[in-house]
Image (cartoon, rainbow, N blue to C red; front, side, top):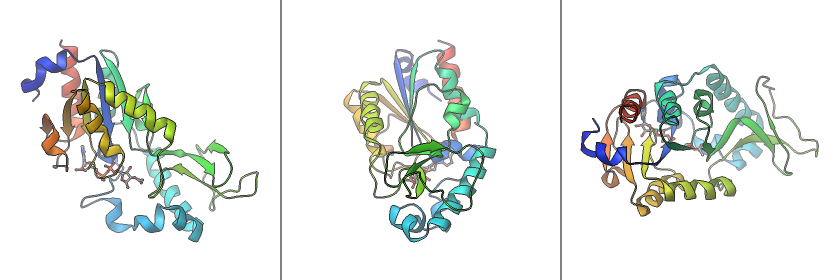
Length: 240
Ligand code: OAD
């Protein structure tokens, strides 16, 4: 599968992964786009914006509770595990748009969560943050400052956490190989990370059953699922 660029890959010192919802699809977590995607049945403008939250905090909170339950019941799949295992052979950084924490549970030690985390909540006004690992209240709790707490995720119209994004760019700019797995690459600014990697002449590899709008920029497109492709890729590094 990787024969065409095997020699280049063997020389790679630093590998950056850019991951999206597709990498967790085989763990039972739905993607956003495509036939079974969440955004086919739900309107993101009513569930994933700060205005939607202020308009109907209960609705948004309940939707996140449902997703939390689904995510807490999920386990990392062979794709997440392969990425974690690759740390034994190379420098690896994971730049993920996912909020499910499955890369960390699989054992990846360097993960930048570009869109936040479903286990974290934060105040809509002050700087207060906390983790909710087990209990789901029916309504969003109130902060000590009296304002409403919200999921600590990035919603449409919001910027990424600046420190996380700046670090992500540094890694994208300095990797030798970027492996883009399970993302449609339609959401900005995460979809610009391959461009930063290309500026460093990195090899770009896409793992996705479908084409993306950056397929033409890839050095290699692997048209299968991440739980199938990633273990094979890691075994190639092991056999160096
Ligand atoms: P998308 O749902 O846009 O894209 C998922 C991609 O994964 C698609 O290109 C699928 O073809 C691919 N895919 C599906 N199953 C796969 C599998 N088993 N293995 C590999 N690939 C598979 O999800 P994202 O690109 O992550 O943001 O979406 C980016 C952002 O849009 C999300 O973080 C979220 C969403 O709106 C916010 O909520 C702010």
